[in-house]
Image (cartoon, rainbow, N blue to C red; front, side, top):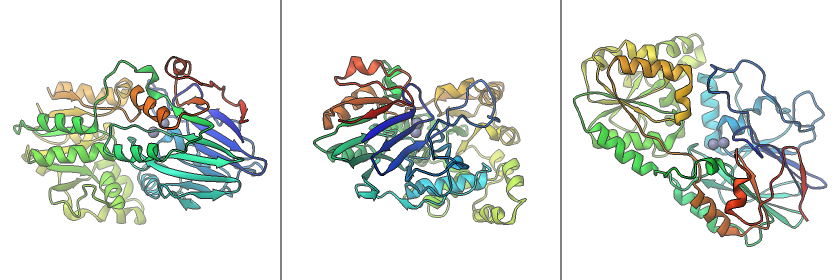
Length: 418
Ligand SMILES: [Zn+2]
Ligand SMILES: [Zn+2]
């Protein structure tokens, strides 16, 4: 078996890995490079790693593409992939991607050839692939155990063990095979060794304590598709007797996922806010308007929000003008619950300036979606691999200080497993 890291050997984001046997070629993730933080939205076409037979307009020679999860740095190139190549992902990943496409992006919907079932092996040509659900800030994330040519490769995707699905990562570790020829190990946190990692439960507790002051409303700036965080914020809001307000996009995401995730249909204290620009955009097309009407009876208006303080509302930086039109929000609480790097973007800065003008009480509550160094050691101990290949890291050379048998590869270099 040959492993080629086409991208991701020395950067976070834009991951793309190829595994090849004599007869079969599979690709693990095809992500976009993360946009620079100082700029606004990206306009130019993304840089495609050189992978022959993967893209539209080429003679297709790839047997399958497997996507570990829905973050753009893993799925961002999906629209460039040749339409006759079967793609595979988690069922909830597809749901979230399709709902997001309806609301936000111009990308078409995805139609996978199959969905992952955690712990259940699937066959693609020479490869036997067993996906395992793992804990990450994306809801439906998988790691893979892949066998072919009497070799075994493990790819962690993005994972951690301090979120609300820590047990899933444990299950994956317990089921790692005895013999692993290569472990493709994510090392996002290699650069942040000294930072203590908080659990999602600790974030939830601190959010609850912040929400206890009932004299003012609380806004939470977080990603709508960080479901662990959303669940934590909902629980904090419920314990502090607050109404939980989400926007219409988030409502469609959580209602589409079902399970036990807080949603307007089955949770009595959840209401839905209709952001002005998004609502205008969605009502332009009939099929999209249907998505908007699904929640009209749970709607909370700007006027109502101006008359009460007993709510916790999930927001995004794009909703600034909506927030500006709610009365009586001076001195409100604001939980910034995103990666700190986004504070450098113009849009977030604009929002934070407004919060300052309004003398909002701002607190920062966030934890990483990625494994800390201790967890990386647990993964390595669970499978004692013959070689560890750093991936999804800016510091591959730091692996050498932590582990034996590290094999640093360059983007595009083909590594034959012997
Ligand atoms: Zn990633
Ligand atoms: Zn991720």
